[in-house]
Image (cartoon, rainbow over all chains, first blue to last red; front, side, top):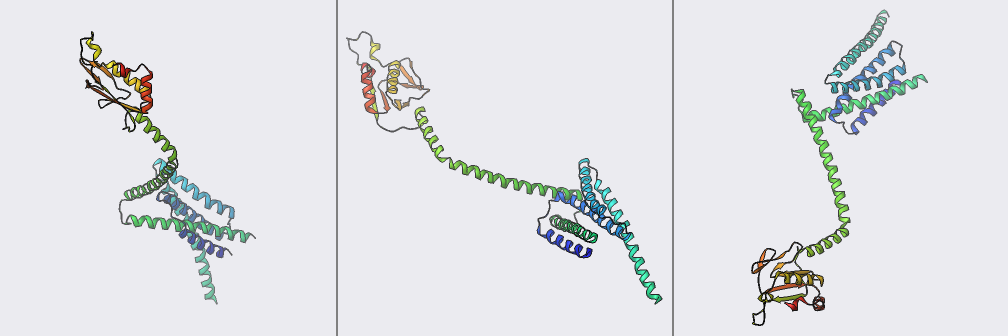
Length: 121
Length: 204
């Protein structure tokens, strides 16, 4: 169920993304930072579901609030002439790698367990 | 039930993420096709792209303004009847001010100094004076003359007729006997009014 909706949602999103007109260049900076924040949320969601403490409310609120706050920070940075979005990117990407590490270890454990099971047989 | 909820929300989030990613990638491909990706100076590239955006906005504004101009022009042409009335009024006023040529029926008055004779005590009475011309012109204007000229000098609002030695100045031009006064207007009316009033034309 979850995988099916993920695939459908992704395909629809890509199709719609090709249909609607492109955004202006000055807005693309904000969209980029929002994408990074959203990606971080998605990886965080996957990691938490592996750790069995996935909460839908936390996930969805994190997805939107992170993206919006990242955009606001970028805007503030542009106003203050400080590249605040760099800090946001560092935090988000750092967390993304942490979560990726959790996911990787989980699947590595699973594979190695399967492997040892197969050996015992 | 909970699984369904999670599945749908995950689908929505993936939809948003995929949409944003595709949009961003498309935008950046277009922008990078304008500025080569090997462009070393990021700030310059940024500036260039921002100027390009401003330019596009300006072009849009120009289009909008042109449309507005079209609308204004259209509304202006619908007021054509009003404008026609105004132009006819302007023509009329110009005629009164002596700015345009006037054609039509009228009268021609010729004046000349009187011939000297021993019977006349004061020789000045025989001559045409500026006052005589002024009286005639006033008389003609009162009789409804649309345009008056004296020896080719059009009588307009600012015209002055003065005496300067043995000549008369009309609009600063010297005039002397004989004078030809041309007036355009209803012939009959002018002639009749000149007879009714003591007739300056006959007294000189």
